[in-house]
Length: 156
Image (cartoon, rainbow, N blue to C red; front, side, top):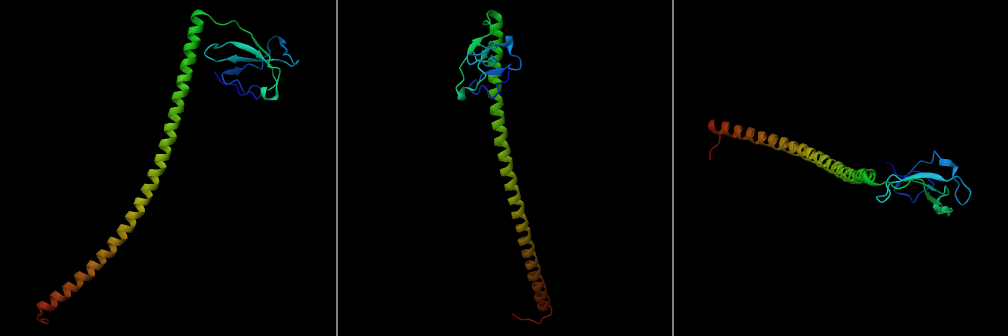
């Protein structure tokens, strides 16, 4: 069951609006059409009630009246169990979303580290190429010296 998204009842975090249907045309103390909400508190799950349609921050008349009698027996137990299950699943979803965000951040960090390693590897390969070309020059010089020595041109 969804929490109220109505701008008229900001303080009701555990109720949902049925305000499209204004049951029996009930008026609140300030003469306005009362709105109908459904409570999703643990004490009164699923019970509907009237309340003033003026937002509480604007100091409405604070009208409140239950429409339904409280549930008893098995119905109350089932609704309470389902409400507990909903709360558990909402909490689990919150943790999963936090873990997902953490993993997305870790993935970004690993991607950045991978790019740094790729850049470092390119620099290493460029240095290795220079070293190999230097070694080839040295080997070429050694070959020339070796040839000269074999030809008897140099004496040590």
